[in-house]
Amino acid sequence: MARKKYRRRARASGATTFVIRVGALCCGLLLINAILCQFLCALLNNAFPTLFSDLRALQAVMYFGPILLIGIEFWIYDRRVDYLSRHQESTVNENDQSTTANG
Image 1 (spheres, rainbow, N blue to C red):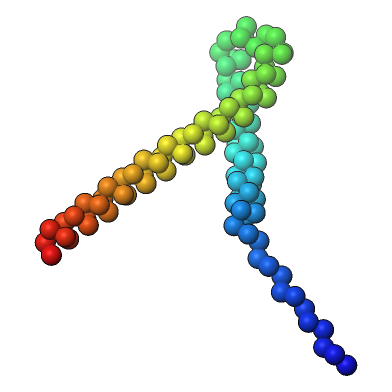
Image 2 (cartoon, rainbow, N blue to C red):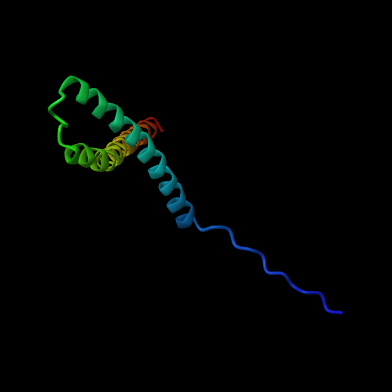
């Protein structure tokens, strides 16, 4: 009897893993941002009762607030990574120049 050959299952590609990780990160951030927006709206409603007297304004803030915060958080993350990569490249270049000057 011939033995069956089983095909090995391929690992998830890097892109698939990246999409899953970003999706999970967005879900977590959306949850945290929604809680933060709800807290801030309650705080502002106590301080300024006429600010959210119209329920539509409160709903708009509760809907768009967390989405806007996710955009801001990713923008800050991008800026930070860009700054750190440029800073790391400059220190590597300085180290290369100092070793070639000494050698």
